[in-house]
Image (cartoon, rainbow, N blue to C red; front, top):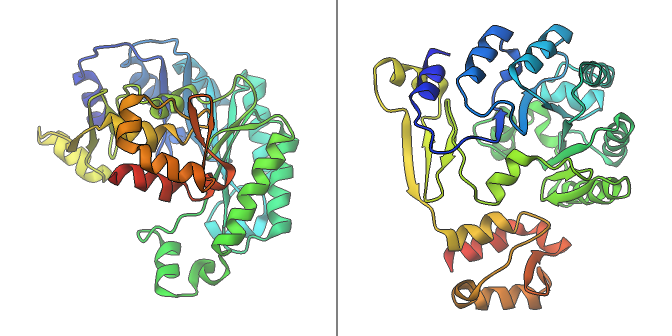
Length: 332
C-alpha cells in the first residue's frame, strides 16, 4: 500500500479520469480506510464509473458500505461457474446461493451495475453444466456478463498439467477446443435472446451497461495503471510496471523506477488489433486500406470480416479465429 499510494501521489495528471477500475488479485479484501485513502489520492470523484473486482463470499454489507463511501458504483464478481463440481476443481469456495446473496446485498446497498464472469472450458464442464450456469446468470438478472474461454497458462497449475499431459487439477477433463467454442457460441445466443448483447468478444451488456472503463482500452483512449503489473497508455507510448508485487514494493522502497517496459504504440496496427474486438467494428481510412487492403479483401472474401458501408467488423465465424485475423494485421 505504501508503494501504491506513493506511485499514485507522484503521478502528474495531464487529464482528469472519468473511470476507475480496481482489478487483479483481490482488491475487494482491502479494508474501508485503506480503500478510501487510495481513492482519495485520485482526481475526478465522483467518477462516471468506478469498478471493484470482488470474489463471491468474501464481502459483507459493511464492506459494501465502505466501497460506496470511497466512490465505487460498479462491482465485477469472479463467479466462473455455478456448477459445484467445476467450482471445487477451480478452488473456488462460493456456491450459487452465496452469489445470489451477494448480489442481493449489493442491490440493497444501491449498486445495481454488476458484472458476472463465466469461463467456458473448465475441467469437467459439459453441455448440461454450462447451460445450468447460463440459466443461473439469467435468473440473477445482472446487466453485464463476461464470458472467457479457458486459456492454457503455463504458469498456472492446471495449465502446466495440460501442457505436460498430467492428470492433476482435472487436466484430462478439460473440454476440447470445439466443445469450448460451442459453449461460447451458445452463450452468445442465450444472452442475446435476453437483451444482453455482445459488444466486445468477451463482454455482453444490457443497453446502457457496457463497461465505460474497458471501452477506453478498445477505443485506444489514454489510461494510467498503478501497482504491480499495471499497464498504461498515454496515446503514444505503452508501458508496464514490474510484474510481481514483491518486486514492485521492493523497487519503490529503494527509490527505483517501477516501470519495467516501454514500447511505442502503432496506431495503424492497434486500430485493427484492438478495435476489431468490438462488435461495432472500425472505420478504416485511406491509409489503412493502403497498408492492409490485401488482408482486408482476403478476410472479406473468406467470410471472416464483413463490411457495412465503410465500417468493418468480424463476422461470427471471424470472432472464433480472431487471433489469427489480428496477427495478420500485426505483421502486415
